[in-house]
Image (spheres, one colour):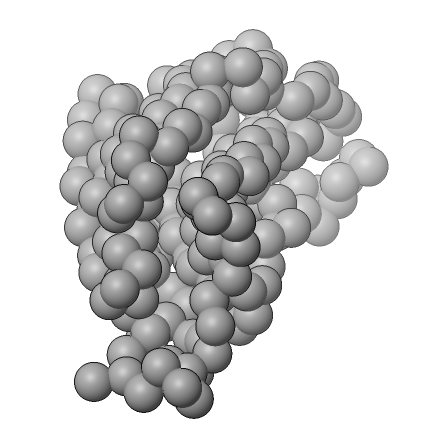
Length: 219
């Protein structure tokens, strides 16, 4: 049982979820030989879709196809919500490496709303369409939906989410803007991007974590 007299006071809980294209996907990525992005990796095809040039990362600023972040503010009499939705630049090139398109997807259909204050339950959902022409079918529209729940008396965080099979997905949480904890990391199955199964949110992610030690870090 937590000794509340010595436990870190939890003033905020941040949760962020990313969809991103890994720098290296077996059988799918190549290195651009020329052009302004020479040396970077891209998904192979008639149109080269640049990856996010990274592996899994807990950095909230890491490049992503979409980044959905909710911060549950617990400092007031009632909890409140801060929401950040972001889609980073998408870039496609031709086979020579020349840029064909550089644009951002809209965040208009990405939402988060508090549906309960005790326990705190936040509903998250959204979709982001690729802003460039002729991406892989699996990238045409990325969707997600689910809930984030925080129980103050237990210092417990629960995530129940539906995501896609492509690209990669990751989720993290932090107390009081402190050290992030991994909620989940999911790499895309081999060969999935070219199949109909890659479309839509069909993979369920359920995870529960808590600050059982009272040190301000989820474990």
